[in-house]
Image 1 (cartoon, one colour):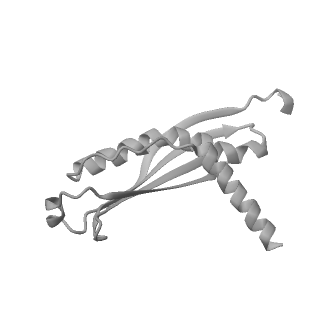
Image 2 (tube, helix red, strand yellow):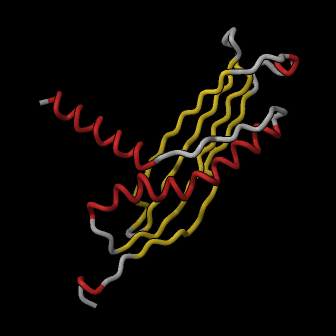
Image 3 (cartoon, rainbow, N blue to C red):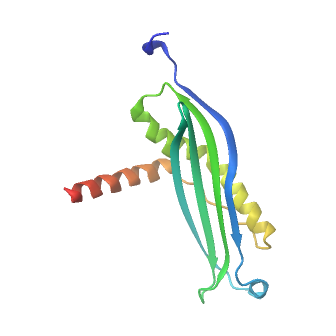
Length: 152
């Protein structure tokens, strides 16, 4: 087949939990609290080539619940990963695939892991709101461009 006839390939090879952590630093006393905690959610996503045509994307979500006196109720962090086969895709499309498409696929899995782990820890489940990875990607590009512009 010539280069022009090759069709792009995108397939999910494996989805797995790469890392999982739960901390309840003030247990068991913290379970006596009736105050509604402030919940902070942080997302981070990274994609890289594992071998030719095979990429890993890791979506890490950190959820911290704190009381008004700044005591931590719980801290949970889950790194949901996926191995994707991506071949015959133009180079300029790779970053958006790894930064938008792959995290969109991984998000429902990490959302379930977080909710399940928090519930198993004895707290009401945390249901993560949907995330616009396209917007996050565009914001990251704008930040990189602004940083590059100020560096010159």
